[in-house]
Length: 152
Image (spheres, helix red, strand yellow):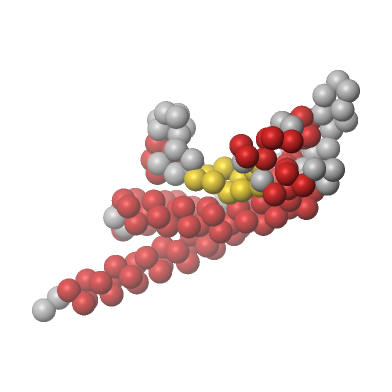
C-alpha cells in the first residue's frame, strides 16, 4: 500500500522560521506546533492500545527528544527539534510496547501505532501547516510588540 501526499506552502513557512524569527523563537514555535499537532495521534494510540494492561495506554506521551547526533537528519540539523509520540520508557514495565504492536512467536500482534498513524497522517500534515502559520504570526506579533515597547 502506497500513501502519497502533496505538500504545499511549507517553503514559505521554512523561510519565515529561518529568516524572520530569531533562532530560539523559531525553535520554540516548532516545539509548540509539534506538541499540539501530535496530541490527536497520542489520543488515537491510547484508544487503540491493548486494554489488558493499562500501563501501555497510560504511558503514551509526546516527548521532545534531543537527537543522539544532531546532524543525523536534515530536519534535526536545520532546526534542532525532534518530537516523538508513543509509549514512554515508563510504560515498558508491563512488557515491551513493540511486542504489543508486532506480536511475538507466541503472542498475537495488537497494533495501535501504525493504524493511528495511517488514520491521522493526512490530518497531521494539514494541521502542521495551519498551526505553524498561526504560531509564526503570533511570534511576529510578540516581537513587534516588544520592539514597540522598547522604543523611546
